Image (cartoon, rainbow, N blue to C red; front, side):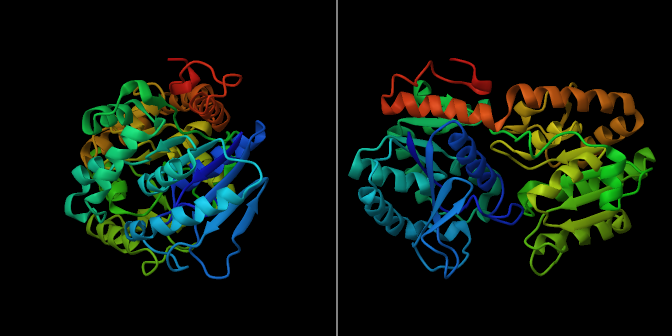
Length: 423
């Protein structure tokens, strides 16, 4: 099949870790890569956010179409909705000129979905939509700090009704679609996110620590991801303080992510806020901000850590816990969204309430005091990640969805569900 992936604000060429660059960039890049590996042709359409970018870029065997829609500068995704009509006009014209027609459009995020609906109406191409985050869930958790307009809700409602398939990334995502958007469960396909074996796998912990300059004999905690308040990094900082003061357990916290390779408070204001919290808690010397890191480096961070921690307020899925599990590292995560599914509580890691530093501190102290337990959880996480959450299996499941909704009976099978199981 010839497949068009739309990802208006998250280019597969983007560097993850910034405010608007994270899981969706990784998802689109890896889905495209794996679809090509199993024989499909894939084009990714994303907004041109830099001047002098060519219309067509390439990575591996994938075309990236840099769509001229709005000024060619980086803009917060909350400001992009007015440019989606121009995005759609360009895409329709581009698709009409292609010698081989597209069999499917897979939209990522609601604005890409709006473009997908215009294409569906103009060209009749089936539409698959992955929201990655739902507006009503975001508004529930972020309130007035949510910068998206209310029009997002109506667009999402239309997408839920008119998409040929809506991809839910976890059971909570499916539940939210049904109960907040009145989605038809028969038109939802459960397909999770994943990791790539070539990127993430176990390494020698001592060598990883030596490479990063981390102390060998300390309990090292890793937090890695976008530097925005909803990710709950402040919760981890406060938990470290409680862990030291209440439980008498020392540890070092390494925080990776941001808008620059160096931990710069101007480029990433959230780092400044977090440093202030660390100072207030009296643990500034034990909290280390390492800045943004390239994908090739991340496996060393996961492997160097005794535990990976991620406690966002909410999380539609969350790819970083899978990457940590794939490296054999136990995970402590917030009991929300997709994290609730990817972590098997008590088996591959521990789940704690979000915004509860005391509960997180207790979980950290538990793993520090019981190294055999932490080791067993890491080993179980590695098995679970490989069995259920690889990008190869994600692409296979998506290809089945594409085949079904496009009427390709030769490639279509039963409805897919989490882990590639039939439904």
